Amino acid sequence: MKLLVYGAGVLGSLFAARMHEAGHDVSLLARGGRLTALRRHGVQFAEGGSPTVGRVPVPVVDRPDGGYDLITVFVRTHQVDAVLESLAGVQGDVLFLLNWAAGPDPLGAVIGHERVLLGFPATGGTMDGDVVRYRRPNFIVRRVAMPIGEPDGRTTPRLVRTVEAFRAAGFNARAEPQMDAWLRTHAAFEVPLGQAVHLAGGPVELAADPDAVRGMLHLVRQNLAALTTPPVPRAFAALRTLPQGLLVPVLRRFLKSPTAVHSGLSDFSPATAAELARLAEQLRATAGAR
Ligand SMILES: NC(=O)c1ccc[n+]([C@@H]2O[C@H](COP(=O)([O-])OP(=O)(O)OC[C@H]3O[C@@H](n4cnc5c(N)ncnc54)[C@H](OP(=O)(O)O)[C@@H]3O)[C@@H](O)[C@H]2O)c1
Image (tube, rainbow, N blue to C red):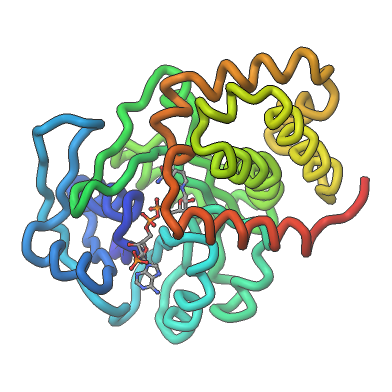
């Protein structure tokens, strides 16, 4: 598969390295200092805080050139507009693997509706200088698949091909028939959670403030109620129906767990704040009442 990986941060770098190792013809698109570092050292990665740094010499480009079988986009929500413009004249289906609650239409309006696929990355990590520190997947994370879907929910040959290629490279990918609803449900939870964590100064600090956790849960419930479809996965409906007295202790325990502490919730970068703000805007713009 001729693959362009657009965005050379945490996930784009990891994904490009893995697909390159699996034998695909991969180019990783980067910019600025990241481009220079990747040209010099390739993708450098380490598990958690390990001092052992691996390297994969993935070919790097600074702009899309020619056509691709698939373009995968790994940028932040607020960075998508600029990417779309640069992809308008480049051939290839485009899979957006990122936080997105505005539906497929604004994407397709720029690059062509027939080219859009949606998904969400299931792995995670952080940048440490130019080294990607990926999180060792724990039992729960290993069970969470990387959902990928057609905007209209069909199981098309290109979707099957893409899922198979990712699985062969070691990603736990699966076809998701309600990908747009999945992404909106995720944002409905992630925005209040991320913003509450930022306000409190960290997941553990938020856990220490039951009133703030209750406030966060209230906003999650409002967001879920405003979705125009039932939540996907269905289990998220429990956040609306189970009593607050039951959910708040569970959320506080989660916030204190290593899974939360070593997740993107502890990332206070301006990019994360900007991404949460854009996702919140997208949720507001698409809110309905059920
Ligand atoms: N990291 C995680 O643990 C995790 C887990 C689950 C989901 N996600 C989601 O997955 C998506 C990607 O996350 P990430 O952690 O990989 O983000 P990231 O580390 O911030 O990487 C984004 C990369 O894309 C680059 N980029 C943005 N616009 C570009 C453009 N126009 N041209 C070239 N390069 C461009 C950025 O460059 P600059 O630095 O120069 O802007 C950065 O290197 C986000 O929606 C995130 O919320 C992340």
